[in-house]
Picture 1 (tube, rainbow, N blue to C red):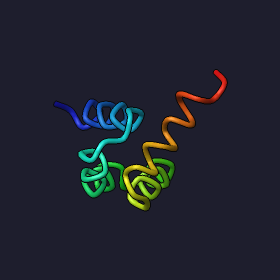
Picture 2 (cartoon, rainbow, N blue to C red; picture 1 turned 90 degrees about the horizontal axis):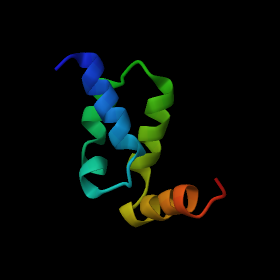
Picture 3 (spheres, rainbow, N blue to C red; picture 1 turned 45 degrees about the vertical axis):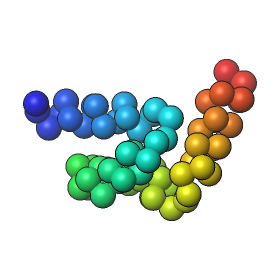
Length: 67
């Protein structure tokens, strides 16, 4: 698998409902996106709070907001 396809798969995972495995993968994702400040900012948020808070924010943003 190429580095580019790995990055695309990781970005897709970042759009999914946050689970424990995603939060645990933050250090690996930081290394993969070391030069991308926007992704690093997202990873900062994923690593900063309890999982249930991340999940509540996801639901609020994607399930309860107007589309």
